[in-house]
Amino acid sequence: MDWLEDELRQALRRKDPSPDFEARVMAAARRRPVLTMPRWLAAAAALLVITSAGLGYRYHRGQAAKAQVMTAMRLTGSKLSRIQMQIKAARP
Amino acid sequence: MVFSVVYHFLHDRDTAEEIAQDVFLSLHRNLRAIQSAAHAGFWLRKVAVQRSIDASRKRMRRPQVALEDVAEPVARGVPADPMLGETLRRLIATLPETPRMVIVLRYQEDLDPTEIANLMAIPVSTVKSHLQRSLALLREKLVRRGVREE
Image 1 (cartoon, rainbow over the protein chains, first blue to last red):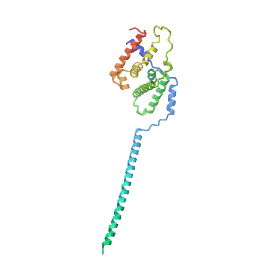
Image 2 (cartoon, chains in turn purple, brown; image 1 turned 60 degrees about the vertical axis):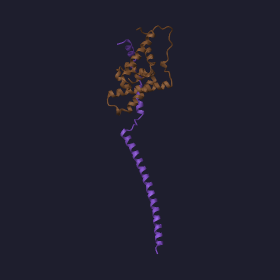
Image 3 (cartoon, rainbow over the protein chains, first blue to last red; image 1 turned 135 degrees about the vertical axis):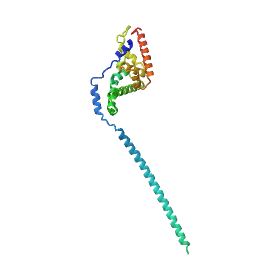
């Protein structure tokens, strides 16, 4: 092996962190509770939100369509009664 | 291993401890994804490499000089550097990010070019050429400083 590679191995020998490093990491791990959500739960929550939004939109569209039908029926009803009255008036 | 990779890459003990702590906490959060001890080792190295490069980039945007990077006053006419290791570490610190990390992984972690390529997500040929060029550059700088004759 070449002298430079030997020197590099010497120069880059593993270094240790401060003696209290491990204790600090453990303390930090205890301080930060793991709040991560399992993937399946996140996916289920997203699906629920999307489905509810879809259902809400369909309900809203249904209500609008119902209102339109009711208006159309009211208009038709008034026209029919007007025609009926005209027929009655025209009879001898 | 984690602290040492970051330390030799950044040459700054405080930042290296901060990053190493962050890497271990990250492992703690992702324990479910770890399949074996070898996988944990690979994962730790990979995250340490990524965080070190990120820190180096941040530092380049906001230059900082660690106390240990400040050159000590040099006595007049020092013929040769008695502390070759320190000289080498300083020369390695002047290399660009990717070749610097390749050198650290090769000579500190004793990884072969294929392992380094996997870890850094770069082609093996790139790792090999970084190694060759960096060694040539370091050799040339050392010889120029009169540290070692060819």
